[in-house]
Length: 211
Image 1 (spheres, rainbow, N blue to C red):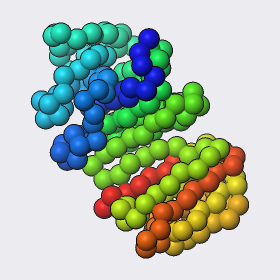
Image 2 (image 1 turned 180 degrees about the vertical axis):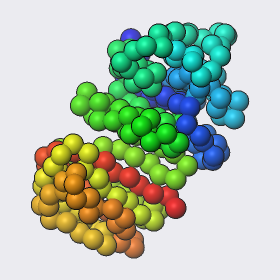
Image 3 (image 1 turned 90 degrees about the vertical axis):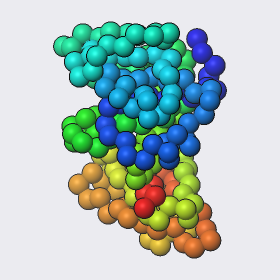
Image 4 (image 1 turned 135 degrees about the vertical axis):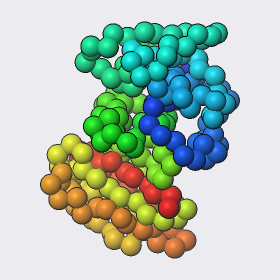
């Protein structure tokens, strides 16, 4: 088992444009899992893997002073889903996923669903890409500061109830957001404030846009 405080960083094969921003979000003691074609980011990130996972249908199986788990091509879990499950089995509680959204919409949606899986397991997790930062808000509070020009709240599991948003341009009080009416898109933090988001029932995807 691993230190529960140590963060697991899972690196997928979606494009990364702003490597410097991503590198500034990484910590020296993070545990790095590269998933198959996520290895294409290895040189630009300048980070060696602790573990590599994949069926290697899109990238050559690597060799080096690190662990490799080779998966069958025909399987239920994607390489990234398997990586998240493997990291949970090893005791990690905190997750950052990069290189997992953009490009193919099916992979993007599947990888966003990993946030739901980790939230169900009571793990802390976020996805970062070139433009935004994503996390799940459920049965608790989240905060957005004014360094983010916009933020959105998207219902991803049916109905989210008891939704309250304070210190934002478009405030909510004990509202509901459903999957078929996503009116929580593109809100703004009030100047000099920190927006506070609360969800009493259900789950929302919080997207904090940096530009």
